[in-house]
Structure formats: structure tokens, C-alpha cells
Amino acid sequence: MPLLPLNVDYTEKDFDSLRERAINLAHSAFPDWSDDDVANFGTILLELFSYVGDVLLFYQDNQARESRISLARLRKSLLGLVKLINYTPQGATASTVELTFTLAAVPVANVTIAAGDTFRTLEITDPIVFQAVANTVIPAGSTPPAIVIIAENSLPATQTALSSGLANQEFQLDGYPYLDNSVAIIASNGAYTQVADFLDSASSDRHYTVVVDENDRATIRFGNDTNGAIPAGTISFAYKTGGGAIGNVNPGTITRADKAYSDAFGNPVQVTVTNEARASGGSDRQTVEGIRAQAPLSLRALSRTVAREDFEINALKVPGVSRALMLTKNERAGILENQGELHIVPDGGGVPTPTLLAAVLTMVTVTYPCTLTFVVNVMSPTYKTINIQTSVSIRTGYTPSTVAASVRANLATFFALENADGSPNDDIGFGYQIDNEIAYSDIYNVIRDTSGVRKLADTPSALMLNGSAADSALEPYEFPVLGTITILDAATGLVIA
Image (cartoon, rainbow, N blue to C red; front, side):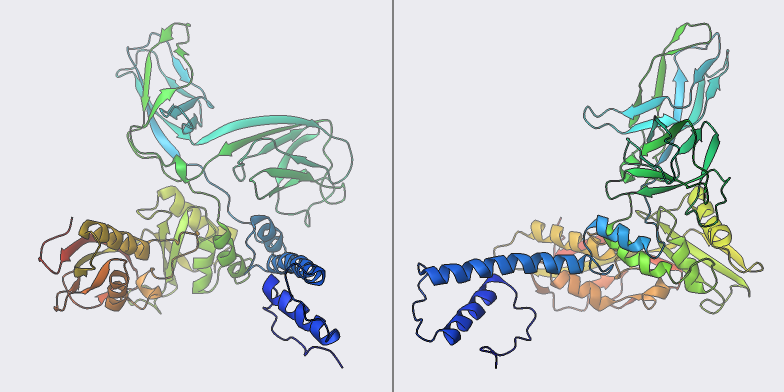
């Protein structure tokens, strides 16, 4: 018969719980032991065992947690887990921008801006760098002596390696963060093409795969001459690094060229460069929370886009897409039979670029093809602005302006596309996804629960959404965005700045 009853509380694995059970066990085994003083050698041993048990159980619990997609916290663990279900997390994408390149005088000979020329913002430390994506020429005699070029927030990188001639060779690229699908590989036996895996590769196919680790470093792997040809001789790698949302810089911020320019005759020319519009298209790599949310959904649409939800799932696989909503005639009268509207909200909100809309259309019609006769219209979202007016009583000891700032911050969080950890904010979405309304009670609770707010005023106009003390209705295709916030002090009736 055990000296102690079986412990079925599997949460009692900390030092204090283990120490208590160890002391109870010692007392049941040695009834004459009555000295529990901390200086007692027996107590010291029991506490030592409890400490070691606490540490071991801590690591055991963490190892168990890292073996589940829904619980893992380490990016390295998640990358290994989602690979088992053939899910590849999105990497960072590079923003692009139009740069106006202007000469101080009309050139007497052609002036060439070469692909790979770099331009940057004026920050002394950590400037944002862009490179020209193609050769562009300002012809001799151009009036005005200016041209618009396309630049990308990336940097070129190259390296070489010598093939060993063995099967399954791997090479890690030195530069990082690696931009997905940017590497071009040429070996002595020809150019190589990227594939997802070698399952369909023949022995003569010059294929390679890319695996990006938790530090955004890419590893290139080649075949074994049965599935994928082994590269020969010197292997050249050309790829890009950089990207991220940090590259979406404001207008007029890219003003520095990294090299001096001359015309075709070698005459120096004075140039100025600037971006008249904001850079767009840059997005950060998929967060841990984003991977947790999207990886299981990827099993819902493995190779095709069929059901309404499949369109949303596959659209979210495109870098730069934050939200997606697919509507057919079943959800919205007026849509024709065998057609659908796929509404896209880009990262950060606003209007998606034509490039992003085209990428989504390709994803749901080519990469994951839909029914041949089904017509998909990929479009920008229709935003509905929610203007809020509220009258609040301020708690004693709080400054009205501080409380008002907190209310505005909490409302901004409520309407944010993503939570702080990068996971989707389920409080906000298209009307179809959130019961076709912004609930009056939800906004009321956000304001009331703000630190420093004692209560909302006891008047019918204590909270108004778009001028009405009621829920704000949404059409299925409408996406709510936060508009103006007017906060009144209930004691004075004055607006709090």
C-alpha cells in the first residue's frame, strides 16, 4: 500500500508542491522525524530534490508544449511542425516605389541608371535602402531631363560554392533576411529551377528546394540524381535580402543616391532623386500567431479552390493580404450565379495595389485553381467609417486628457486588424464575419473599462455611433474602420482634447 495517496493533480509540479509532498512522504516513512527546520540536513536534501524536480518538469512541460502547433511558442518549433503538413509560412516581401530621377541640366549624352543602383533615406543609422530593378536611360537632349524608375527595398547578394558531386548537397546562403523566391542558381551543368519538393523530379531535372529557418536564413538543397540532378562544378547563387513593412516609407524620404553618375561620354552629371508617392507592398514575415492560425486552415484547401471559404483561405496565403471575404449569390443578392466577389484588405488597411489584387487572382485561379466556369472578381474593400462620440465621468486622481488618450488608444486597439502578437483581431472584420454590425455594447464596454473612466454619463447621448445610440449596421461586404472620436467630460460638458 502506498505511503501517500495517488496524486491526480498534474498541475502540482512546482517547487512548493514537490517540497510539500516530499516532506509528507518523509513523515509517513519516518514517523519519528519531527525536525523540519530549514537548516536540517534532511530538509536540505528534500528541497534539493524538489528544486531538481521543478526544473526537470519545467523543461518537460515546455518540450510537450513545443510539440503542438496550437501551443508552440518558438518559431523554430513551429517551422518544423507545419512542414509536416506541407505548409510554408510567408516570408517578408519588399516594398516598391517610383523614384523621380532628375538631372540638373539637359544631358549631352545618354545617362544610365543601372539595375542594382541603390538609393536610401537620409537616416544616419539604419537608412532604408532601395535598388533599381531595371536599367533605365535618360536620352541625350531630354527635356525635362528626368525619368521615373522603379526601385525595390532589397539588396542584391551573390555567392559561389563548389559542388562535391554527392547526393543531397545543401548550401546555406550567407545573406539574410532572405526574400522568398529571389534566388537564381546556375551551375556548370546549367541553370536550376526551384520546386517545392523532389517527388516529381526526374534524374535529369535541374531542381532545388529552399528552406528558410527561424532567423530568415535560406538553405538550398539539391537532388540525388534519382529525384533531381546533382549540380556540377561551380555553383553561383544570386539572391535578394531585405524587405519588410519598414520599407513602406513616406513620400519625399528617399533622397540620396549611393553613387555619382556620368553620361555616356564620361561627363559628370548632377542628379537629384525623390519619391513623390509612398512606397507600398512591403510586409513582415508571418508571425508565430499568424502561422498558428493559418497552418491548420491550409489543410482545408490542399490543391484547389472550391468552397466559398477556400477562396478566403487561399487569398490569405498571398503576402500582404490581411483579410479576405468571399461573397456569392448565397450571401449577397445581386451577385450573378456562378460568380463571386473576393474582397481584399491589405496589411495596414487602405486600398490594395493592382499588383496585390492580381497576385490574389492568380492564387485562387492558377496556383489553387477554382472551377473552370466560375468567375472571380477580386476587388478592394468597401470601408465604413465609425465615428464615435461619448461623454464620460473621470475618476478622482486622473487627468481628463490622460484618460481621453487611453480611451482613444483602446478604441484603436479594438478596431485594429491585428492583435499585438500578430494574430488576427477577431473583434473586427467584414460585416458578414461579425454579424453585420458593430455592437453598441462592445464599444460601450471598451470605453467603460478604460482606466480612469468612472462611468459613462447617464444620458441617452452618452455614447453615439455615427450619431445614433444604437448598433452600427454593416452590409456583408463593408469593413468597419475607426473614424473621429469625440470625448466629452460629463461634469463640464466640454470636449476633452
